[in-house]
Image: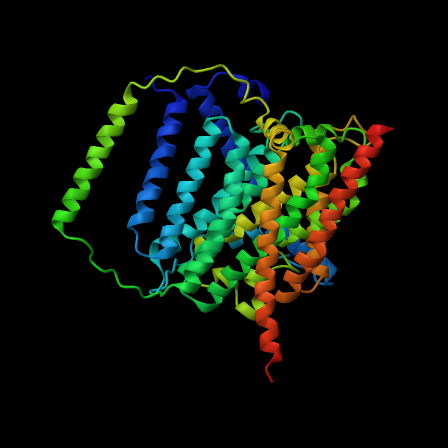
Length: 173
Length: 335
């Protein structure tokens, strides 16, 4: 494989994504994990850009930057700040885990190394925002509308749950 | 010129040219921030019947901000003992980096633009949201009650005002049929969108002031209740990074308002002989002046009023605007 700019970009983005994922699992403080998660999400959005799917990439950032902020608030509010790091697992368990991961990696590598997906010439990268819109509103209109109705139901349900608490408290003398 | 560069095949030379251009833009933005702060203080002084800075650098205090920045640079860099050290250090970076990154898609004139992304408008809104993560991180890492409260407020405000901001520009997207900022400007050649979408303009201005965390929506850093909000523990250059990101966002938001509503670089009729860049700068300066004017005129809102206003007034108005725009567009296309 030749060393093109796209390749360098892909390697660095995927490294950041993987390192973010590993840190997410290994860090002990919730807020640290969430910052690692942000890096992971943003570099995945970068990979979408490399695949010339800009719309998906920026929607990913738009949705997840808000979502991560909310999770961060929950992390701050619902967890204890002085969590002690507890040692976990013993040597043998770790060794077997390592062996398992290495075996899995090897199997996947052997499986996909010679995999040949014939590249079909498509026009998907040309103005793909418009194409997504046309597909969504012509072919998949019913699932799209049902999704929005379900989200609306969830929203109304959340409001009713929040309101109910309020009234009960108000009823008390 | 940049159009050709964007279309040319990538290489090291190309990379170097873009790098130099980006550094140039950074210095232009830093120059804007320097004199933007000065002009803000001058205009505020003028509106409050004061004089404003007039000592450093001649009668108009031209070097006042330079002196302030120098002071910040040589100030002691303090990190509280109980702070979360790595996050405390990385938070200003997370807050500042997106503010400069969003400038990449701004078409300043028909020739001067760094990236022509198909979803430029969405790009701006998405990337600017990352700053809030930096602000919340700063609030948490400082290990300070006021800072944490400021960070919480920043998150709540971002979530509730980003929605009206996006909804208000949907009308423009409907009229243009594109998210590309170049095409949005091109669609305004005959008539600016401020004329076609006055309601959207008002909602957009209010929501953008809230997104910029400026008075009357500066709850994350309300001096009178939270000392300084999320950056209360920061000093020296780390603090300057937060301030810088705030003013770079002011630059970006004023540029975006110019592009979306004031016709970008398009001249007024019969005045086409004035260069496009001058037109852009003029409209941009008017928006900046307007932002400063709002800051001096209005008192700060209460936190619950802020939330109520966002959800109960701005969002329904923005939704109604989308509905009416779609209806009118269909009716006019039938005629």
